[in-house]
Amino acid sequence: MVTFETKIRVWYKHTDQMGVVHHSNYICYYEEARSAFMRHIGSSYAEMEARGVVMPILHVESDYLRSAYYDDELTIRLTVSDVPKARFIVHYEVFNSKGELLNRGMTTLGFLHKETMRPCRAPQWFVDLLYANGLESDN
Image (cartoon, rainbow, N blue to C red):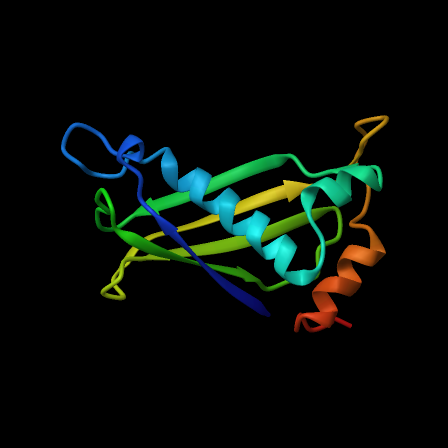
């Protein structure tokens, strides 16, 4: 299992008329956490695409437990439990500055050849980066 945390400050435009973070923004917070995680392990989505692989979202789940508000500092904890094969499953927990769990979610991303848009396995170099950052082999 690999765990990574990043922080996000809630912008005014993320909120509704009541000052509460609009539910759709949590999906954006997940994406920011994934992007920061990719940089943390030594890669990026840009590098993945330059190497001929794209990673579209196939499925999203999001459970809203408590509200976040304008100017809150949120911690997004990302967890990868399994070695990706043709799909990459990522779990998220979003906490406020008091440590209260506000949201939990999950995304499933696929791996596609950029040229053909046909499914492919996770690139071995990407799997190796995950291993190098603490993911345990399922062998």
